[in-house]
Image 1 (cartoon, rainbow over the protein chains, first blue to last red):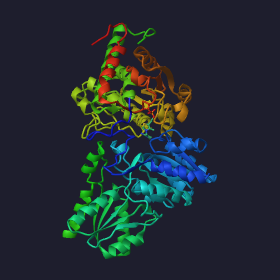
Image 2 (image 1 turned 60 degrees about the horizontal axis):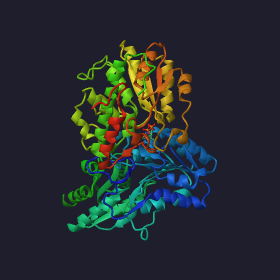
Image 3 (image 1 turned 120 degrees about the horizontal axis):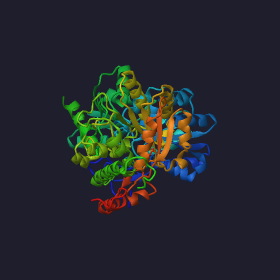
Image 4 (image 1 turned 90 degrees about the vertical axis):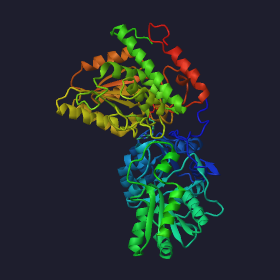
Length: 333
Length: 290
Ligand SMILES: Cc1ncc(C[n+]2csc(CCOP(=O)(O)OP(=O)(O)O)c2C)c(N)n1
């Protein structure tokens, strides 16, 4: 029997191991696992941990390559983070994987105290961000960025594609201190050209320029925002697109300078619209004292349904057309 | 199945075995419809659910909120396929609704939750069930009700700290109306617990936590009935019944599969699998039933 022979049938909740590629032309397999191995080849301090989700978070590749530097902690997320913090205190650089929900909900206190307050050099790599699984409220990490952003000392990153993900890993391995990164696993779309893009911790990147409307996006929403920019161009509207993969520390300067010039902004995030990117942008413009008109694309204040990913994206309006429609409304009103 | 040691009348055992076979048919029907699912778990736990829903538990399929009902608390949300089968067989949901398993807008989610009638809580974020079961048992006792709590957790859930916090509380409060079944099917997401993170000795752990504990063949209806009967004679302690079960029980191809945490099968293969179930699960003393 072939376990993985077909992609998820439309209209049916997908296998938890399958990853939706949203029709991407190009994908890469397991960019996180591959990048971690690459870094670990030269840095003997890198160690890996998981909580019964090795092959579900691509860290099984690291485990196969460096079995003696890998610790399977079983389905015990609090201990996963506790032990990672302890490893960090003995000089290692632990990459600990589970899903967003189990890291941020079950192990919150352990992240806040063991990792963040202790400034332990722990890298938390969290799968199934936002609506990347159809498994409903228990598995969809819809509010993790809000939770993680509110913890002092913690760096928070939501990479957009395989290119950026692969670039983030060596950077955070070098960066001293606790990091929370949202993981895209399995077949991951390639949206950015590695030749033309370089991830920098704490820096937003202007991917497109235009003066009619600004779009600020994070994580996988950047791919949809790029499509929205094209849709808008088709209507004669020039949109700027600022991609913000580091949510904390937040690149206030880039945001202020863009929104001073283009004071109409649509934010787009694979996350609830409270406490994540939209809130960070709103904080930045309020503190900066610049009047802007703003529309927020993201998950509303609800636990989401179960279902297929296309169904959920449509139901909660996280598609490219929802972004461009919000931008159009800002331009035209 | 061999039920030689049971003290129960064979007719009752046989009728429960027929129920378990029905549940297994429902499980295959759901999974075949979408080509995938937690089939191994659904098949493996069918015997327990047959005994609970068609022998032990008091409930009213037409009045799910009846205050004195016994409660079945499913901690392992991904085992929902098994519970949907039992709820359909019990008349809580329509049999035809089983065809919506995992479909958009269906109440029968891949990882079940309390949107489905008959689900007392939302499990699936594993490690929640026993704590809520403890609370329900405390509440029912405070209310002076005789209703009991039957909860199902997995061997993987023994790794969650929350399970043991709840276990300690249940013993402290002498919750003898609480029956916890621990499905030791020897699988979790990354492989068998012995390789992932050892959970044994399971029996001794529950005993050490102050529980009345038994360990039995969880695919033997007679043994299940006997164990529950025996547990009911023990007062002052919560009851742990550790079940050794076979994932995919009843369908040889699934029983023999190494990786059966989640199963995906091509459309062409289901009829052979159905055939395996029908030929393999003849209840004791019966000729093959149709
Ligand atoms: C708190 C939590 N951590 C991780 C998971 C992901 N997960 C889903 S099923 C599973 C394996 C759990 O073990 P068990 O229930 O024994 O597995 P099975 O017998 O179904 O193979 C894991 C780790 C989860 N659902 N909840």
